[in-house]
Length: 340
Ligand code: NAP
Ligand code: G4F
Image (cartoon, rainbow, N blue to C red; front, side, top):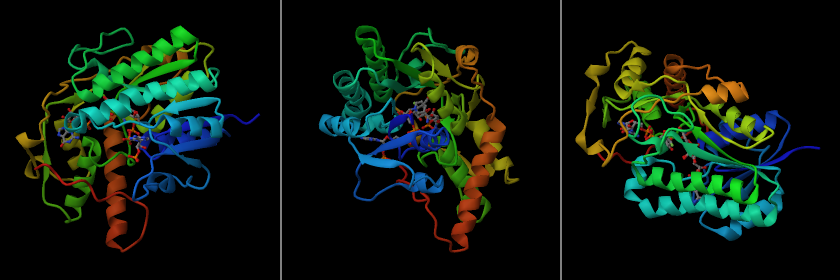
């Protein structure tokens, strides 16, 4: 029988890649999207799956709408990817972040418990949970020391996922994913901000790149690979929690240097750091230990840092070239105004 899957946050980076992956597995894919005054299905259109996903409106702050999408889709598996996912914004909007990213997860879990506790549930947990608690590489038993309203909300969601597993026997998993990026990454996040700015500068459309903390380090992987790990977690005999990472970390400065190298320019001539872009509290360094996901699920990151940056810069160069040729296509080039 065709498996039915429900993805919340289907309009986001991971939601779009996961929908594509699950369609490739022959699943009936239901995508829960948030109704906006201007629709944003550009990622689904970019991946050529807009017509294949069954789109249903939902808001994580509205239990009734969650009840409706679960009842309508009757899923075998739910992937909860929806969140206010931008760490910086969580300092400006801590309550909205708690409502969506934290309580939103409780609302879905409770709908699952009441409607069909046999549904398998994936929760998009995060390496941000570790905060500054550990200088080395973090695994499934490393303590969590959240350092942002986003991380605190995700920590609550992480525990609720475990609690519903232990208390009610729900097949609920936490994927503790380290940063993963792609040409479909939102423009606010540092990798895409850099690749987009570098492409514009290389084509004479931009002059400089202004960033915050250049010393922060992250374990950056490639999003299309990471969504496969989500699916693998729900195909096991028993539910569990898994770290998903490359095992390498690089600084923002290395990211910028590598991106400018892709267009044969010297990063120092175009880049500056502004104190206005520093966070009230920073997570200095994150690196994951993917041993468990490798041993139990056979998952391993293939695309590493240099290739990832190249993929992203080339994709943005291609978009801006198409834009210069006057082509119309589904894209997200206009970013939010900078705080600079
Ligand atoms: P993303 O691109 O920001 O996507 C977030 C999705 O959540 C979007 O579809 C967004 O809808 C939706 N959403 C936001 N508020 C909502 C609400 N109130 N009701 C319903 N939907 C709502 O994030 P991502 O990078 O794909 O990440 C997916 C998930 O993994 C997130 O939970 C994120 O926190 C987590 N995560 C991401 C990473 C990473 O490196 N990417 C690492 C670890 C964990 P709109 O399109 O309407 O805004
Ligand atoms: O790209 P970022 O905004 O990602 P961050 O904060 O690591 O969060 C992302 O990864 C998490 C997993 O660890 C997810 F849970 C979360 O949802 C999100 O997807 O920032 C990365 C680093 C930070 O240290 C930030 O301070 O880059 C530094 N940075 C320096 N200048 C900048 C900038 N970040 C952004 N967004 N913009 C800058 O101008």
